[in-house]
Image (cartoon, rainbow, N blue to C red):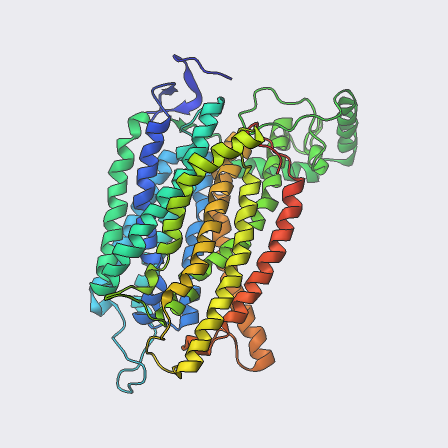
Length: 575
């Protein structure tokens, strides 16, 4: 549907709840405010998350494996709460208001963490390993409560932001035109670019401040960043168009599923006969696009046929009466879930970047000339690579593939995700080989029980970071755009949040795998692979090989679903 220059945007309002107007609201200008905010938002989040494993182990006195699990649980919770942010954006509020509320919550959490880091009385007393009169006691009581209240307020705020900000930016483009769809694709690429730019500042400047000036500076900079993001976001208010909430998408999903289960067999048979008769005249009803469906088929499609029982003239309950459009929308969401599930393993691998990889780097020589690089700054390698690759991908690779394939997309969403999943296999193989080399240096230098830096540069760890960072770019940008463009309009924020939920489940799964590996290896060898306070006694290389094998199996699983998937949006070609 082309919109003339004077017409309103259908189903969109401005920040004062008036109808949004074409050429006044939305477009690149409105989306640019979102991109600027993303730099500050991710700076605030990753400024501490990237170094948090060392803060918890060195200042709160957790063991390496416990601190690693604490960080993965914190980050997992933050990303999982994106589903809540997406749900509230679709159901009750606009993405505009969810961002503002979430930013204030994250600000409050960071203030609490800054106050604790600034006051020694709110932290465990300093200790030193091997010194009897200075034992290390893990944080507990009110101090632990303050730490985790601050962390999980931050997690709640981050979840709301992740669930609202990407769809808010993507909603600014007119998807009814090829130009608008291409601009939306560019937005997602630059969203990941801005996310990485914020991360670059976080893992360089802020991490250096934390290691050299104190953690109160790190938390303070993060607090300032999220505070400044609010007026920048508000400055774009006159230009935004905001999607009108249409009620709970979960209500529609539950209603269709329950109706399909409860409708009487007699009613189901009658409805099936009607469907079959209609299908005779139209053998292959088209799947509805992700656009707002104005004219929907008179009969449901044949996929997920058990849900067709929800469309009945005599429903088991009047409140469960469903339309064909509702059934088709639920089917679209169900088709997204296998693709979403296949990205979880990559994020399980990414969890290692903030945990074991940081500990590995901390044991190595981190000097570059006279400069000592903080181990938590290692993510600078994938971040810089993403910042280079994102514009190259958008301005060179995509135009080239569009000319070759003669399609609007050039590279489909599923192809992009598949490339990322393959790169994760390579990354974990490299991680295992690098750890074998590091352990060899440990043995040769006789430093297995020493805290001295090993005579091997931390640049070796950069290789696994580069491949995992590239994998993250392909999968995250691809999955964000895939979920947004394929999902029904009424469920877009929630569907886009699946990208972050994949990260959350990956972080949780990483903790579960570590625990299972320790339990199984502890029983079989009486010495768990990943237990103790000395990383040199770990069998981390075996763990990385295990992750490599699991990633390869996951990639084959993904290929099965990707080759079966049929796009619902008009912009995509089959993988």
